[in-house]
Image 1 (tube, helix red, strand yellow):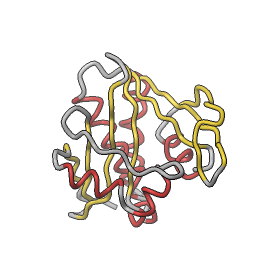
Image 2 (cartoon, rainbow, N blue to C red):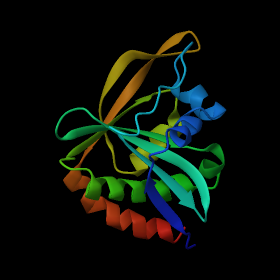
Image 3 (cartoon, rainbow, N blue to C red):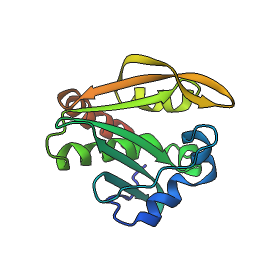
Image 4 (spheres, rainbow, N blue to C red):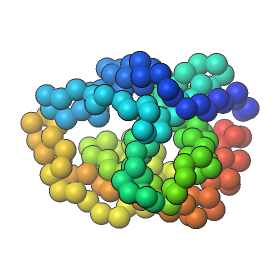
Length: 169
């Protein structure tokens, strides 16, 4: 099914903050007794997406060093239910790969209690490179976090094929 997908750089602090403050997203990303972090839409790459004219969420990329960046994904619940998350995430990754100078590695750390996020990032071709034991406090318990990474070359090699495959879904 063809969809009208618009990928755009977020420069509006309120849009980014409202997205990460959405109750289901905030409940997942925030550790016990914390709130969402204040978005830095100037120094980080916050990318939003509209599908068929409707906003579905945003992606945050922030720099670790000259070649390595951390990614965070904030897809609104209704969009996940419609299966839009993978289709759009690939297009966002394509935007990052063509617009972020020096990007060679993208990494993520995801609490093991979020199986849905694990499945999402694995479907995008990420590779588990390790585990951070007891690094996420949720529900009064410390949980491990999986650490994922993918290189620019690997992402570019697999991205075009996945985009074409998902367009038909």
